[in-house]
Amino acid sequence: MRMVDLIEKKRDGHQLTKAEIRYAVEGYTKGEIPDYQMSALAMAIFFQDMSTEERAELTMAMVESGDQIDLSSIEGIKVDKHSTGGVGDKTTIALAPLVAALGVPVAKMSGRGLGHTGGTIDKLEAIPGFSVELETSQFLKLVNQNKLSVVGQTGNLTPADKKLYALRDVTATVNSIPLIASSIMSKKIASGADAIVLDVKTGSGAFMKEFDQAKELAEAMVAIGKSLGRNTMAVISDMNQPLGRTVGNALEIREAIEMLRGEGPADLVELCLTLGSHMVYLADRADSVEEAREKLVEVIANGQAIETLKTFIEAQGGDPAVVDDPTRLPQAQLKIPVKAEQDGKVAAIVADKIGTAAMLLGAGRATKESTIDLAVGIELEKKIGDDVKRGETIATLHANQQDVDEVVAMVRQAYSISEGESNRPPLIYEEIH
Image (cartoon, rainbow, N blue to C red; front, side, top):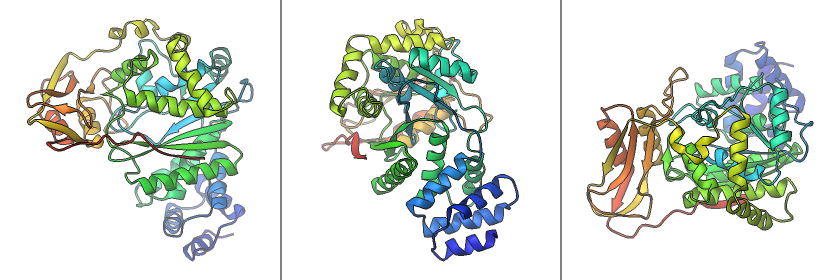
């Protein structure tokens, strides 16, 4: 078998066989196939697409290029949730204890963030003492014991994907549905879940800015999951403005606590209930999605969800007192208001700009070597559809630096305030089963 023949075959629009895909992935991972040939194949895939069978084979080839997490010792159906990412997306931190409170085992491996805020792992480290580095045996034990553990990605998961992604990043082949879908799903399959719920974002703060693109990606990932024997569904949700009211690590932990107390912002509550009801249903903990939702509402109301959060934090070395007293989380020295310059209604918030502004405060990493300030971030006092008076605070910066003029200007630019009517965008656009 020769790589040049595979490139030519895909260039001409033909379907690659399982053996050919394995040959390319294994050879590239081992360093036997050079970058220039793999980038040529990626570009051929970019233009010629892949069938569902090819996408599934590519996913499994990447899964089998490294370690796979064995969750078989955990009792029950393990359901994982993946978000394609956005601004202020603290869903996992609220959602994991919420579904665990109903006995759904959540064994989650999360990554660190590169961009506007930290990833889930960085955010959890805002809790004093919280450890994201656990031995595999301890990780599995905690899930069996408490139905929940979240740790940093360990071992050699999907090395082929890491290598191929780095290549795609510099060869203009990132924006390819089969390559994105197989990249995401390879990590989910390697992490060992039985069922997968996907939160695919669309809008100004999402990777997939157009709904049609987001839907195509969601359908591709669901098809891959199903063809590989994982019960998979996707929710397409809005990212035309940040999720909730906070962007920043400790701030987002505080908001997740509020949500589990039943005091969270409406959009975060709704998204957690929507995703959570599907997780509970796929885990066979309810006879319907509707019944699952009722059960989730109940564990928020009766305090079981917040108690599960406390148990989770304490089990991983964190200070559970932050749940009752969020001032124990890192606090920024300064709170700087950003004022509206005109009357009207908030017509739009460019989520990406809010994310970049938070990063400039130190809430995220500009490079992998950057250090995150866990205390800083942005609190949105006004969201789309809200009335605003000139001089009223539209956002508050939580900062540890005096010089924030650039950040204030960026937050103002992110807000569009108009005199006409302003419609709030829908939160959930579609569900893909």
